[in-house]
Length: 263
Image (cartoon, rainbow, N blue to C red; front, top):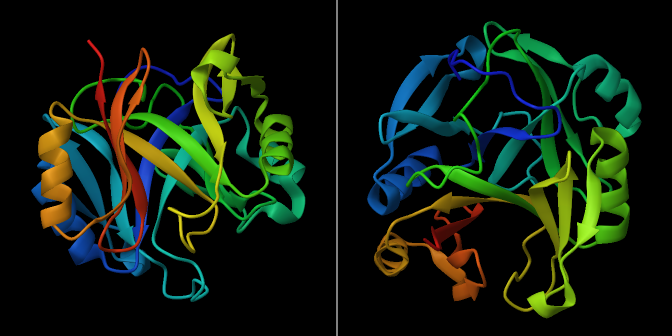
């Protein structure tokens, strides 16, 4: 998470991070499927933090699950949302906070929380004059995250909690979209979404945030993901005016989606 120009807009996603119980398996999987490369950063007692590189630019990060994490916490992708004041957000979220805010030099001040359904999310006040991650997470640059979506067993409670905390304005997808889906908006623009987590294809997966990574050729990625050991839980699916996507569980147990955007 090195310095790059531009300041993020409060409420927007600025970083995606895999917290994994099998980091080697995860790294090998994403290299095979997406061609990701990695740059290691020494984090002292926390070990090595791996920056994801795609197309010559940072696309996110990977780290080992902390040794003191409860055994019930699975591998998961953790998105980061920009806030103007991490300490104020921490006080506002109360017992939902997992740990208090802390500083990362030249990156920002941050903390993690779990919403009422248990999905984990990080809030961060980026360092002055910097933006962390790609210039915009809605980028369709291959190998980069273009969308973040909450899959939850309680959309009503989780959605209200997050909107009150972050300032998102919720809106429903139009009826002709053919699915129940909530958009989270900032200044009239959708920055993320929320759907219900249910059977059968999700199995025993708990509520989580999932990122969508842009790809050039979904068919090729679908085949590569299967060959690399992923479990496909949503087969190739078309979203009108958006693109085609698949959702998989990677070999370390984390859910992720790959999308080929429409031109």
